[in-house]
Every structure is written in C-alpha cells, then in structure tokens.
Amino acid sequence: MPESTPPTRRPCGSRAVRSVRGSANFASLAMLALALCAAARGESGDAAARVTPGGSAPANPEALPPIDAGTSLLVVAPHPDDETLCCAGVIQRVLRSGGRASVVWITSGDASVLDLLIEGKPFGGAGRLRELAEKRMLEALRATSRLGVPAEGQLFLGYPDRGVSRLLTDHRATPYTSRFTDAAAVPYSAALFPAHPYTGESLERDFGAVLERVRPTLILAPSPRDTHPDHRAAGQLTIAVTARHGLLGSTRYWIVHGGEGWPSPRGLMPGVPLTAAPRSRGLTLAVFPLEPAEEDRKLEALRAYDTQLRTIAPFMLAFVRSTELFARLPGRDLP
Ligand SMILES: [Zn+2]
Image (cartoon, rainbow, N blue to C red; front, side, top):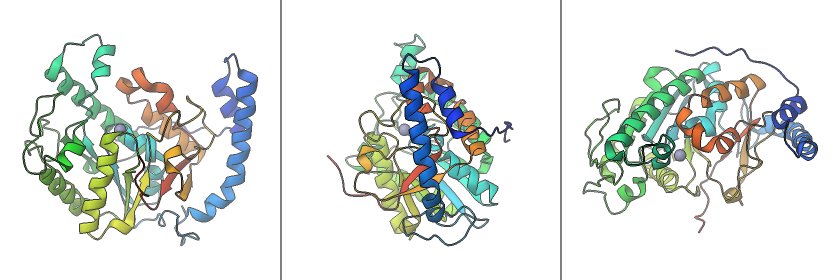
C-alpha cells in the first residue's frame, strides 16, 4: 500500500543550500549548489521538450516515449535499491498518469558481505547472507510501495548476487553455485519461480516470463557500461531477451555505477540536477525532470533501505536529484 508523505515545495537554492549547511566548506558548496540549480533551470525548457510527461509526442528521438495511461513500465533492477536510485521519478510519473509500473529484481543482493561486517556478523556465512537477502527484499517492497508500485508489479527472480555474468557465459546450461549463499537454485520462497536452477537458460526463460506477464511499453534497464558486473550482465540479459520479444526499441538505459567519483557531489542535494556519468560519454541522454514532490517521495522510498544506507548513504543520497537520465542506446563497450 502506498505510504503518504506530505510533499513540500521549496525553492531550488534553499533546498540545496540547506542540505550542505554545517559543512566546513559551506560557502563554496553553496556557490556550487546555486550554480547547479541555475544549470537545472537552464535545462528545464529543453528537458520539457525532450521528455513529455503530458503524453504528447516527443520532440526529440532521444526522449523517453510518451507517458500516459497506456504506459506499462518495467524497471530492471540488478539489486534491491537500484530501481529507486535510477527511476523513482519515472515510476511515480507513470503511475500518476494512469499507467502501470513493475519492477523485476534480478538478484536479491545476497552477496553483501560488507553488510554483515557492519552488523558484526563477519562469520555468518551462507545462512546469514540469505537472511540478509530476505531483509533486502522486504526493504524493496517497502520502497516501491512508497512509490505506489502495487504488489503484482513487485517481481523477484532471486538469481545470485555477483553471479549474473557467470550465468550468461560459462553457466548457461550447468548450474552455478553462489560462493556467498551456497545455493545453486533460487532459494527464496518470495521469488516468482522458487527452485529454478542458477543457469543462464533458466534466467532468460524467467525474464521472458516477466515480459509476457508485464507486457511493457517502456523498459528501463541497467547500462552495459555500468562498472558493476551484475549491472552490466543484467543490461546484456535485457538486450538479448527483449530483442527476441521485439521490445528492444522500447528499452532505455540508466547507469548507477557510472565511473570514479560519480555522482558528484556526494550526499543529499535535492533540487540539483544529476550530471552525466563519465561512462555515459558519447551517449545522448534524455533528461527526465522530477517535480519537487516526486523528488521528496524518491527520498522517502530510499530511506526504506536501512541496510544499504548504513554502508553507502552518501552515494545513494546523491541520486535524489531533480533529474533522472536515460540513454536510448546502450553504447559501445568501454574497457
Ligand atoms: Zn545494484
């Protein structure tokens, strides 16, 4: 059930400046925030022309397709939290426009050894990591419920964290065993297809079943240029399977691990636009502007991820910005 959060409208400058108050470099950060806000204002007219939340035809071929009551959005998330980081604004806009929104999580984030260390459980082993994954799935349900995603749109596949690329290469037909959970098949009862084997063929079949179920008109997938191997592999999986279903043209690409130091600056700076990632170089990006209430709700959703905020909060909060960015093309591979 969606949880309500009172949206608050604040001027760009005051929101950004408040977020850096207390810093030793307050003056320089405030100047940076104001400059970024000015850049956002300068972009907004162009962005409105390229991104058409009202449903009119896009004026630019790089734009997202029109969002309206006929939209069926599918966000492909390699791990719990990616869907909110990349796409919370688009998810909300689709639902507000009367469309449908679904998220498919490829893995449940069960390789987060760092989380166990933070919890003081460094020797917890496979059982502890599976417990952690159950917790992360609950966080994902809470986060996406806050964005308005209904239960039928919350789809877990439960494949191995840090193992997706192996499935698509040397474990297409022979099961892969996760070195984190010791599982060689989907171990989660909350997954769509419990006990399906950890093979590339099984993953592609399950992903295809999700496409049949959701019948997406817009797919937001991780970029094959992302530096995280699961993200790259999930992007390649999406390209391969959507091409077979004739949906490749409906796919757009986002990036979360976009290169050293990105997003910059780190931390919460709402009202400030997201800059293009270094690994997006050469790609033309559609700029999706969030309304302040959508940005506020994105932050509320992100706050559901207690486990991740304990370890990488400045990184995660840096995605709560006034824009989200999407590429129409995956681009050539980068080293
Ligand atoms: Zn991820």
